[in-house]
Image (tube, rainbow, N blue to C red; front, side, top):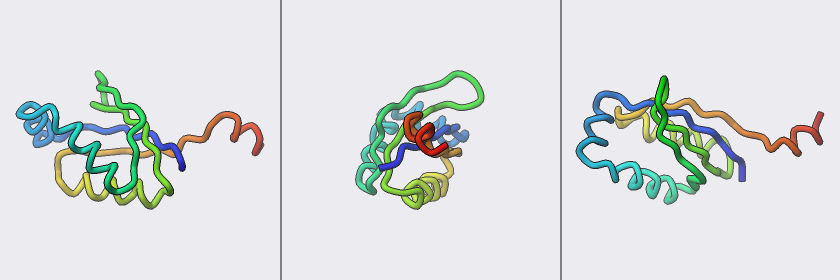
Length: 93
């Protein structure tokens, strides 16, 4: 399983949805679980991004599928980054 960092920002529609039902965030995490993506940790942020999520996925294609699926709803915009453990990084230099 690979680790990915997801930086996301709510659109105006996303803000309305979260204000109306804050638990929607947890519902989306459950949807991700059904497509094989595990949310390890999640943080609400102040600044340019609204959320930072650390997820596990079998491959980058799963993360791309997630980005398209969630982005198509019009409630969130995301940037995804693959994360490599330092030990793996050092071993492969």
